[in-house]
Image 1 (cartoon, helix red, strand yellow):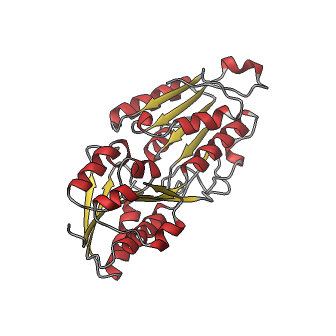
Image 2: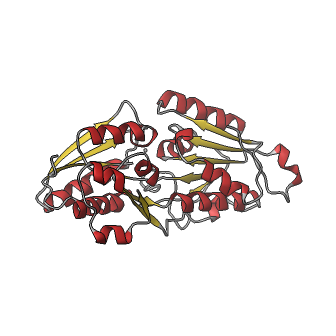
Image 3: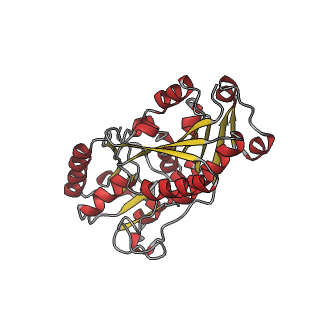
Length: 298
């Protein structure tokens, strides 16, 4: 095995439910819009978070763009026409699409780094208009991921960064990783994926298997990628993100305006380690990394 090489992976049904105290709920709708393949994600956690707040699986519609910009544009136009009571936009392309289409109904976005830079909100404290949600700094997290895998791959000399061009915010993250890698005297290979925007998450089993077949340790954005064979992941805690998104939806349906609900940032981050993958790669995870891991898959 080439221990000095490794790869860094960077992130990318109808349900309804209305609070039981709203007896007119049958007339109201929530739409969940994902730019990729929502059924390949742990979307059930969002359903559960909504259900805990009294929402039933009847009038919430789940829409997936399947990584196809034309399909996403069509779904956005559908949402603009129908004007659901709340739209939950999962990923940056979904949120940007709704913003650019001038949707006037409330939107709660999730997994959207730098919403100010993307023109989605005016500020985090005072988002204004009809958008609010959950954000995080993918640039800082990307640098943290590099540090974690270097703790595992002592003596590494090269790093590859695979990132999706469908997420423009990835550009800043890649630059930050490249800068950090160069200060550590690492050579960097950066590969932009443009034809399959959902590669890193929607096809995580295939990505993990390919990395293993080439004996390349990898670090990813979310823990499901590790459960499906990736070596490591570090990112915002999914459960917290879905719970906080559901709470924002609930507040809006109770009468709050998105303009008055500050954009929130994660308070929990998750480090996951797959020991089976480590053994296959002939790696020993340092005790210091295991000590801070939130999930260890054996």
